[in-house]
Length: 492
Image (cartoon, rainbow, N blue to C red; front, side, top):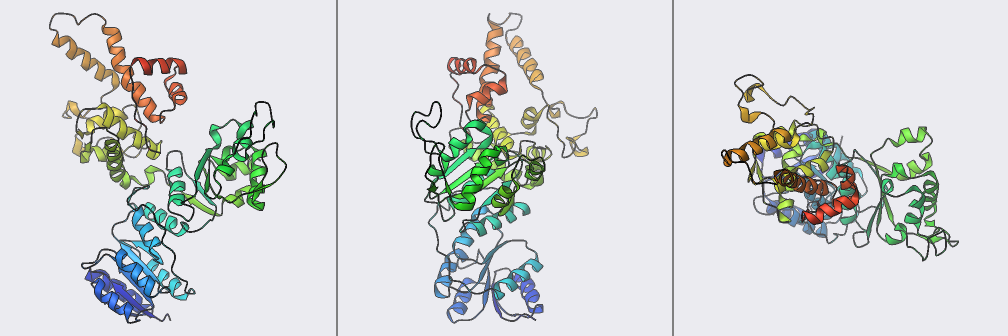
């Protein structure tokens, strides 16, 4: 039977009662209060072997009280609960020395298990609080799967463990890597990212480890590789599954011995970097095919970290959409609001491009449409031709596909939109034909938003945008100048 005295602070009587009963049945002695002042008085008097507290209290925020409790009693485990289930809540709890963070609603069995683990572990001194900007919000979402990610990240922040992030393209793998760096013990060092899929295979070793002057044709001077650039900080190896075998062998040596040699160099160089790797591929399958070293996989996969696709966290679409609209407005685009039905429409889409696709969609809606409120019709216009594989587009409440369905509810294609636009153009002129040059005028009207959207979608990469549009890169550059296109860079 468990023993120990637990202090519980929550202004919700029902929550206090439920937790108290569960812990009492487990064998603990329990004292409860609805305010922070009483909790602080108990802690000052030396009561309690463990504290469970809500963040928002009527008289004081627990995040303000927590450092005082840890300073007075460094070995006192404190479990923080909160209904404000954001990434920053988990980070604040970790930074202020909380033993663990539980988002509301939580599983009572999990809480009892955490209490048991905290009571049985050797007591350790309080962790130092790193000075970070707590106003930034690198990750967004309140779904249960995101809560687990926040808690896992909070536990990893003050470690140097190697992390392997897996997930489909567009799920935010680099955001997670940056969060681990920006809120971790290496935050004052550099964060250096390299995408294995974006670098020619014969140049990857040089990019990673650097090269000496004369090491190969074209090496006219010494080059500092990414390991040297990341010294003292974090090196993010994106798309690690695309790394060639020769580079894998050299990377394994770095992980095993903590040193490397430059291409063309002879003297080993000691390195002090944290490695975070990411991939959207099945590395186990690549290992079976002989395309990825199994020993390297085990070295990189110390802490496996899976990011869910957007279709597994559809309840986060509202928060993400509002977040991306706010980012767009901060960069000078009009601030948009989205109606409830339009949000529901977004939740019925499959999102093969995940969060990146949603971000690009919101930026197009902000940049290309004058309406302040984004309607279902605008969303349908943007998603036309794409398969809504989550659930049917229409429902009985929306009128289905029957004859009574309003015309405005039908998805509008680009062709039908242009037909409507031209029809209005001719009507405005009555029986007179529009001014000469209509063909080039219409092409210009289409080209500008099309090229702008392609540049935004590829984050300003003209090579990728040209490939997306099927244009020669020089042709794209010429059109950007001629049309005076000023695209907006999407945040990474």
